[in-house]
Picture 1 (cartoon, rainbow, N blue to C red):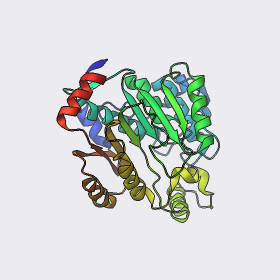
Picture 2 (picture 1 turned 135 degrees about the vertical axis):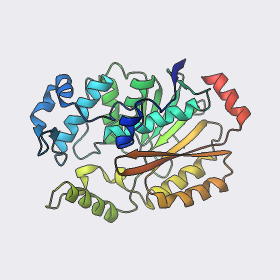
Picture 3 (picture 1 turned 45 degrees about the vertical axis):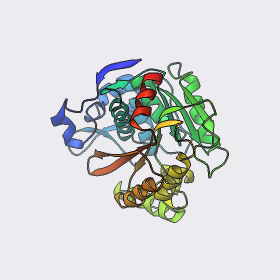
Length: 324
């Protein structure tokens, strides 16, 4: 099924440019805490008035951040139940939504600028995490079906619970445990499966020490002086891997060469601009037929999506006609 929504980014341009979020991202405005509390009353105790006379929460309080996410998911995505185990990553939803909307634009660019919607569109989320946020946004916004993989069994158990408790998600998100931590696609994609796009937010840091230092900087920026353990903002496998995001994505590129026709677009977030030359070099080495870089902005933070495909223009058209 195809959407009649054009993949335009021109509407609400003035508002969008204030913080750089995608024009279809419903979170590009300031949080309306009255609306969020109306949808999730449990958020109310965490909301206070700041020095600028605006409603806010204490973003240094993990419980407040989790409750805010719960309210956002309930208000915007009709998720009745959402929770994560203690010390697991509680992601900022606006940035996660941006990735999904830019992926929709990527698919639309191969479909006469019409975003393909519905369950015929299959997305692979590498590293679904305990929060299941990317699949929630994708299924509830565009009706896509997802497979989510993770090497953490607790994360998979948590994501499965979120899916099973919310009727609107059942049958749309399949959570799979990656039993070999060095593999990315192997053991996850079944022989008879194809995916229209794969997404990934790779572990950012290259070591436990680097991740710990990064967490302490984040805590300092939030005004927390005392030392707090690393898991304030995520499990080790969510935050770091040997070689960091550069090595992870290069491994993903190499493994994608083994399944060139099983996925239309392979994509990954790249947080550090200095990693791009190495990643572009890896993509040239494996002879990808098309590479795109999509820049995303959220306030002062800039990241990008790198997308690649092994399908030529004829194969892309055949894919569109067959699956969309």
